[in-house]
Image (tube, rainbow, N blue to C red; front, side, top):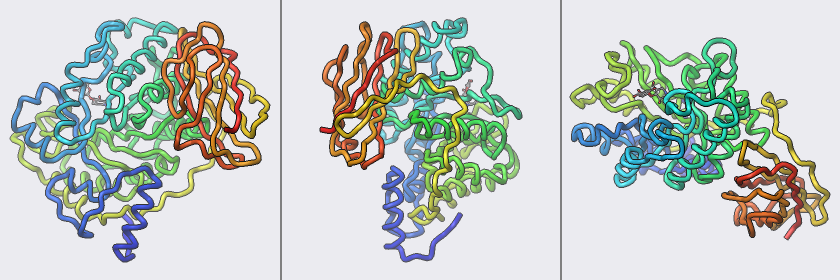
Length: 462
Ligand code: 9MR
């Protein structure tokens, strides 16, 4: 980890600026080398979180809950927000156990990572038996319904989990989700953004800890998404490890961070004799990457782990702190309050690898701006992303009028306010995106039912 010799006040100012510009909430500790006594408080000294996976069935276990409440300030439902749990029958949603975890966390001052909206595993049986456009519609409805249920309550969603193949191909894994079309991932991200604009949207996967074919495939997808304005905010590096993290672990985190997405270590557990050192190394790697927002371990005690018999967690079966716990806490406490790694300039995007959806031609612009629409459609619904570009003079406000075909209706929108939901709909900027410099762009979006193919969009300065 890089350190700084700057005075504290200058470092604090720099870190506050960095945190603001990165959207990271920063908690300034009063002493440069804090000695916080819990994982959550120690991580908060650099504006990060420390989380764990939680199982609803264990919330009656007082040892478990005591450690949870004492140590962690972020929670992921281990299974309770997955598709099989939340939509056991098509169109019938079941949020009881997910809500239990969320409410326990929120009432104890913790934030929640949502896991996971779409994953080829733990699909309910009815979805496993589906294919094609019917499945695509069910997938998008699932994303919309679940993200809407938890709207405003989730720090970050794993929108799509484990969609890339292992091995050297660097490509997608086969699944019925993938067979609905290669654009299923971006369609899911757009639907999630429409349903819960406040949640950070993550792509999450395993065996992506070092720079390898799989992580590079994901890197290329995220770079493409950023280039085309597909809403993605974070990447989850699961980090199910044995003995040690790869030597290029930090470099891998950094290259994702350099794309402009937050990096989250989402499911950390480490088996093997070198456990304590490996945990410290992972912690230090996150601390060294400014956009690494936090670490989540995949369970509390060794006996809570999915890796039966491997004892890969920070507490033993009796709830005692292990050497690995102390090494993580020490590493967190050794960090200065500021993150000192300066993000490098985002890599220049290359040509998108994923086929783009049809874009309506840019319309001539009478009032100093243009609007172009990108559509992600499925049978019965769509997500529209509208790019507003200022002409030769800066905008201090804008208004876009979209002409929706008959039968199409807006159900949900973000980053603009609308008057009307069918036919000619007028969209106005919100407080934070009205000012657009000459030649620059901003985006808003909406979701709707019906078909929006052929929708027009015109823009005027206001
Ligand atoms: O820990 C989870 C375990 O209880 C479930 O049985 C399993 C089902 O597939 O999922 C485990 O969690 C996985 C996570 O959701 C995604 N990444 C891999 C995790 C370990 O398998």
